[in-house]
Every structure is written in structure tokens, then in C-alpha cells.
Length: 391
Image 1 (tube, one colour):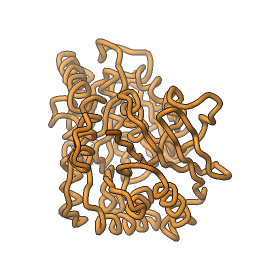
Image 2: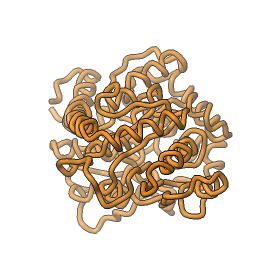
Image 3: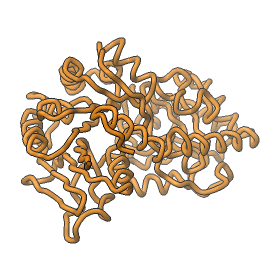
């Protein structure tokens, strides 16, 4: 008996080229790693998929086709304020219509906003995957957009009966602070990248690297800049690269760093497309994650797969889970520049520690966070929902 899955969420269409007919527009989609990773893995296993996604640069909706794959791409309004004022009504209406008309046994929607609400309205059985904690995010970025996103998530939690969570922390957050009471599975993000062997040695890029989209209290790169400035006073040749929006040359992060005397040795690279970003991270020595809120962060998983020792927050959301409680990465108090500097000094000076962290990181990304492990966990969940063995 065949099983056809609907996947909903942001994707990178170009990565699904091998399963599409020739001549398709591969530039569509506004990017997305977890949904694309899962789609790739399922297609490699021979599954048939219907994918529902959006693109803010698209003039009219399109359908991309392949033998076992159809990608429905709808238009998304470019201005975030317009989208959020009506809770993505235009986008949700289009998504709901396409989902309802699709011949699928289950719609698996990622993130708890427009895709989830559309799936719940589609008439199909649904599985919703939560990737963040909207109340926690709002606490650090208290703007109108995040308020409206929280409101959308509250609508989802009232109706969702089956959800997955990317870390134990996130499930606890949704049950205790969002009121979720349905069935659940804990399935993390996957690390899809093969890394170079023998990571942790001297490389040609920056010594420390951090990718953070946004210069704000949530990403907390100001604390990292303070810590690195003190670190560099003792090691004048050390370098730090900051990637992501808000961290470009001449941007807000650099302006703050220069005003506070913390710009020496820092390269403000800004936003890079994912292949270029990963290519650059591969050349660096250590990855630092100073964020104040993370559910199951992709960046340290990718850094671990690339062979970099990772530093992250000791009590920050899903960070300790990803870093194996300190076995697969070094944990520090990211509210304290002194603590963060101390962790940076330890990985800099202790070769045995570096080798241990790299080896443990590799074991983690080849184990619980591997594409095979995560994909099979989703397949088991799908099977439990529809009452079939889909393996």
C-alpha cells in the first residue's frame, strides 16, 4: 500500500534538482534547511512527496514536477508587517487550498505559524513540528511581528493533536508555557554535512567564527565581541569572523564594536549564501554560539560535522542537549564575557580538549543527529499516526 506525504515549510528548491524534471525553475523558495534536509532523505529512500512552500519574489504560484515529487510554490507578500497584520491570511488561504486538493495521507508542517495553521485547516491528518519557543523569542525581541507570531502559535496549540519537538527543552517549553497537551515525539534537527577528517588543527580562515542573523539581544554577539576583545589583548594575532545579517562591514555590529573599542581582529562578513557560509566555516578553527535562546541550533551541528570544536551557552535552551551536556562542546555562561573568554582560552590552549571535543562532536552528528537517525524517527512517527509500518 502506497503512502504519500505532504511536507510544508520553507525550502531550498535547488537542492531537490535530482528529483525534478529538467527545465524547472530551481531559484524558487526562500531557503530552509530542516524541511529540505528531510525531503532529500525521504526522496533518496524512494518516497513520493508533495511539498507546499512560499516565495516572496514570485509573481504567481507555480508547480514544479518530477516523477515522485511535486512542489507547490505560492506567493508571499514581501513586507513582513502586511503579512503579520492579518496573520498571513493570504498565504494561509493559498496553502490551505493546495493542501486540501492534494492526494496525501498526512501533511507534516514545520514551524508553528502559517504552514501549521494552513495544514490544520486542510482537512488532512496533520503533524506539526515546532522549531522554536515563541514566548522566549518575544522576551528578547519584543516587537510587533513577534507578538503576532506568538498569537499564531497559540492558535496552533489549541488545535494541534500531534507535534514533534526538536529538543527536550522545547517540548517542556511548549507543554509548560504554551499549554500543549497532545501526543508528541522528540526528533532533533539533522546534521547533513560530511566534515573533513582530523578537525581542530590550524586552518586558514578565522580562529573563531559565529553566524548570527540579527544584531539584537537574542543573538548576543555584543557579549562575544567583549569576550574576544579581552582574549585578543593577550593573543594579539587572534581573529574572529562574524557572519549573518547585521554583521556586515559598516553595519550595526561593526558600529557598536568600534564605539566600544572591540573591533580589532574582527572581520564583519555579513550574510552569505549557505554554500559560501559553510565553505568559510570549514576554514575556521573554533565555533562560538553566544545566543540567549536556541531550540536545537543548526549552526553548532554543522560546525561539529565540519570538525570544529564548539562553545555554547551552559543553560541556554537546547544548546546543552546538542553539545551533549558538555561532552561534544564546551559550555560557558554566555551572559559573562569573562566566562566566554575563559572557554575560548581553554580550546585555544588545550590540544587534548580540542581533540576530545572534535571526536565527540563527530560521534553526535553521526548518531542521534545523523540524517538516517532523524529520518527514521519521522518515518516511525508517520507510521504511528496512520497505523502502518512505513519502514
